[in-house]
Structure formats: C-alpha cells, structure tokens
Image (cartoon, rainbow, N blue to C red; front, side, top):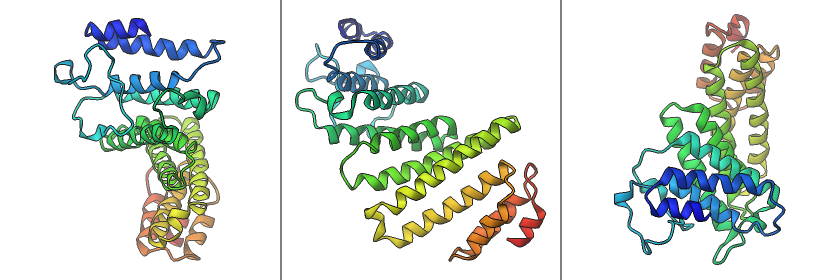
Length: 279
C-alpha cells in the first residue's frame, strides 16, 4: 500500500495500479483477520483505471490517493478506458466479496455497504454498455456478469431489476461472442452457457417485484429471451427448435419475432428450412 501511495504521488499511475493489484492478490493468501480495507483498495484501483490524465485532476488533498466517493458519476468523465483491465479488476472484486462477504469487505470508516455495491454495479453496467457499443462483446459480457454478481449481494429490493437486466445483457454479450468464435465445439459450449443465462434471467424476472407492475417491459424482455434462446439453440445444432417455435405460437408474440426466427433458420451456418417454414 505504501508503494502504491508513493508511486501515485510520483506520477507513476501504472506502477500504483500494479502495487494495489499485488495487495489484492496477496490478501488471498493472507491469514490477517481484518480484510475491511479490501473494499477501499478495490475502489482505489477502479478510480485509478478510470482516472483522467494527471494534469486534469483536482485534488482536495494532494498527498492522498484519489479514493472515489460512492456517488461519483463516472459517465461524465471522457477518457480512454482499459476495459480489459477494468473487467479483470471487477471480477477480482466479485471473487473477493464471495470469499470475504460484503459486510467484511466494506467495513472501513464512513462506508455504506449498499452504496458501495450500487457503485460497483453502476461501474460494471455502464462500461459494459460502452463496450457493447464498440462491438467488444467479450469484455461487455464480463462486465455485465460482474454487474449481475455485484447486484446479487444487494439487499435493496430495487436492485432486482438491475440484476435482471444485467443477466439479459450478459447473455446477449456472450451470444455475440459465440457467433464470432471459431470451431464447432467451442461455439456449442458457449451457446449452452447462453441458455443457462437465459433461464437465470427468466427466473430473476419472475421474482422481480419492480417489474411485476410493468407487463409491457416483461413482454419485451420475454420476446428477446425467446429469440436469443432460438438463436443459441440453432447455433448449437439443438434438435428441439420446433418446440421453441411452438412455444412462441402459443403466446402473444409479434409477427416480427417469427420473421426473425425464419431468418435465423436460413443463415449459412445453421440452416433449418423445415423450421423456417413452420415459423
């Protein structure tokens, strides 16, 4: 920690990041009982990765590292982000919370556990959207997965909708990643993972009280999930595609969904003319 502080004060941000990463890794093997500072280390690492160039930073106290506050609006900062590094740090944060528990990890002074988790969810989700816009679907999948994982530790009932949307976008990111992948075995494995995420999203949506009063949103997500399920099964050469079409026909799904299904059936790497005709 002292090395990170000195590196930062000397203007060596990358060295400071490496030093803090080392603290996180060493803590996995540490027998020290107090891990409450781990949340602060995680927050500092994320802040450093998202930080504007040194000349543009305004410090309230130049001798302190820029520990980010829970209400920081990261979207307003226009910078080039190392999304791969950010996703790895957030995944480490998820692993750390899983190991230590949220209350133990975020137990430093003036810390609110729910605020810290909400901030981590926002960082993961918002940058996942940025990666998706750039076509970087593999990293967007990892970021949305972190958002879903962090939100699962929140006690606030309003977080359930964010959890559902994170799972939805996580499945979408993995689906796009699988479409771009090479080799049938790897693609089939990825598509099966997509199907698992789709079922998790459906389960989350059913238990989401915030969405229960918004049937229009539930319908839209249901349509997307069914279409994603069909695409994933088509790409993994699943033999039960007709059942998905029958399920769609028995519900109140729009005609546009069946048109999309027909188009998927006729794609070069997954032709199902009989199912296309059925749709």
